[in-house]
Image 1: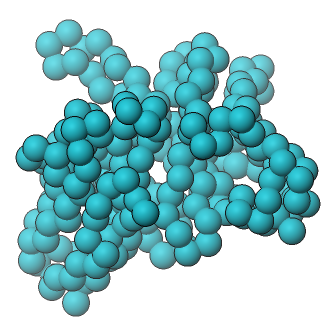
Image 2 (image 1 turned 60 degrees about the vertical axis):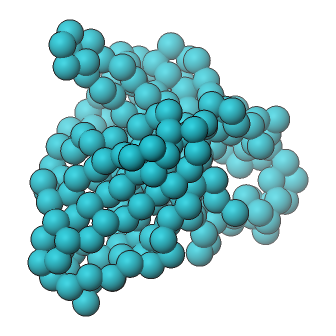
Image 3 (image 1 turned 135 degrees about the vertical axis):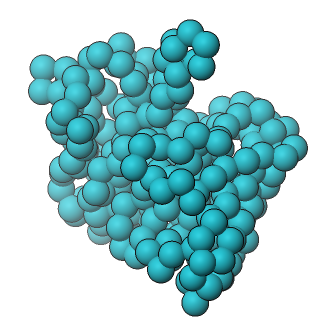
Amino acid sequence: QVQLQESGPGLVKPSETLSLTCVVSGYSISSAYYWGWIRQPPGKGLEWIGSINHSGSTYYNPSLKSQVTISLDTSKNQFSLSLRSVTAADTAVYYCARGGVYYDILTGYPYYYHYYMDVWGKGTTVTVS
Amino acid sequence: QSALTQEVSVSGTVGQKVTLSCTGNSNNTGSYGVAWYQQMSHGPPKTVMYGDSLPSGIPDRFSGSRSGTTASLTISGLQPEDEADYYCSTWDYSLSDVVFGGGTKLTVL
């Protein structure tokens, strides 16, 4: 059973870089799937930050693209988020998640999605202050 | 303002059937499957539907459908543990972005 766990500092100063790591257990991230980051500001809805696949291809939220880097560390079976030049607006709960998969009914071929998540971490709160 | 439109709140009694809707346009809900996420108070999201596909472990009282640019999540036989916020989401190819609805608060009376 795949599990994801976020870790990182809970407090970041404005203009600095927010760095978070998601450790994956129960599955090798180098095998398949997209792996993503989503955040939720206090009292607000969900916002996708970006996703990376097992070979390192990335998709980023266009409004965050200039600030964000998502990377893989297959030796540690983890992936990371780097968000530069943060402001108070980046205060949120940050979730890591695994992208979904659809198996073709006829062929059984898997199609991996970066835009919907099927397994989520518990989240980690980051305050920018 | 969210790219996808959801009801702000929906309520129902135990055993009732309720339907949550998610309306977008031809660039998003009209072209791509819609995921539904359930979020209990102060907890992480949980995926309860993608398109009309039920993830493993999700009760079959949950079902998904789409008509035109509106996706729907139906809960047949509402249970107290279904009380939560529900978010819909999909890909928007014109924005090259994952878009979300603002969320529906489901109350079980």
